[in-house]
Image (tube, rainbow, N blue to C red; front, side):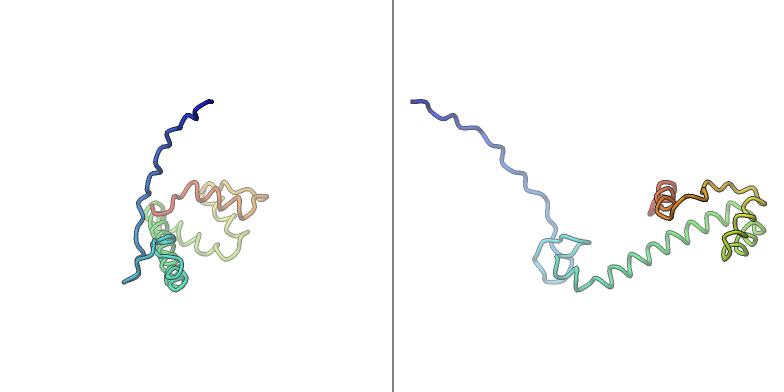
Length: 121
């Protein structure tokens, strides 16, 4: 009769779990620092905070552009923002390189934009 060899199993590592950010909640945080229940309860506030952070990043990006280019460039770009054809004419006139091709879809543009502009920077 053969004896069964016991394989030594490594104990599973316990992952560091954080408690929910809600006061007096002892559940484990799963999304954005909240447990499932409190994430749903605070969903509007979380989304509003994310939107405010995105707006702050955009403002920072615009401020960087404003420092880089003279005021005359910025004014001409503002004029052309509402009309895409006028915007392309102005960027060509000011010699601002536009890598965007005409056949580029919105999703392709966003992917390229996110690669160039890192969130939070």
